[in-house]
Length: 174
Image (tube, rainbow, N blue to C red; front, side, top):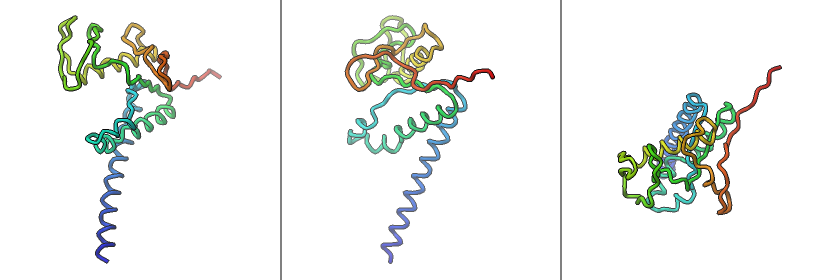
């Protein structure tokens, strides 16, 4: 009897956490879709990242794969553009100010100074700026921006040009 009660209590706690996570993902993805016409994300290999024993629980808890799935279907439903930038695009190693590409940048290096223009970068903020610039270039917003074209690999190791992932519905006048 006590074991059944304890089991039900644990199940209730897990259900509450699962529902809270799902609610957060839905609210966040809906907010992004409502606020932006074009959303740019990086194509992360979530299945491969979960194989890392130290990061598996944290990555699974964050629900990155589910978040991308929700963004995809909500963007399509709302007529928004979702651009997925290839995971091999060197967003962290490229200076978002001048475009200089570092030969190497270790994962432990969180800040770096560009040898070309002497701009100091936070690794993650710099990568985000480069991903947005590449997404805008792919979506056709700013052709002069840096872009990830030519580095997208889908299935094979051969480079393919970057493509817009979701198309906007074209409305024709009646």
